[in-house]
Amino acid sequence: MVYNHDMDMFVALADPTRRTILELLASSGELAATAIYEHFPVSPQAVSQHLKVLREAHLVEMEKRAQKHVYRLNPQTLSQFEAWVQHMQQSWEERFTALDTVLESEKQKLVHDKQERRNNDDGREHQREHYRSPRDET
Image (cartoon, rainbow, N blue to C red):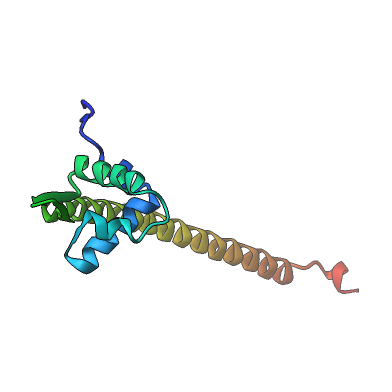
């Protein structure tokens, strides 16, 4: 598989500042860059770099309106991400279900073996009691 050199959404999502920007946009719908800057204690240039990473990862879209840069979430990329998460969840659920099946089978074997040993031990004890020699009773 050839690595896509476009900004990877997982790299973009790894940073807490960028995740906060996404949360702001999710709750506001869209925000001007200046409104986003106001939520962070870092310089506008630093926030601008975070916005650039989010744009390159196609997680946000930017529209120029006069002198403003207005940002909003990119629903297509987020839908692709959600589909990937659901696929991974289903895959792990299937693996855990298969593991549960194997473990239950092994548990049943252990219970069966334990019961068999108990039955064998009971049988031997019964044989010892039944076949005692007359000398044992004295």
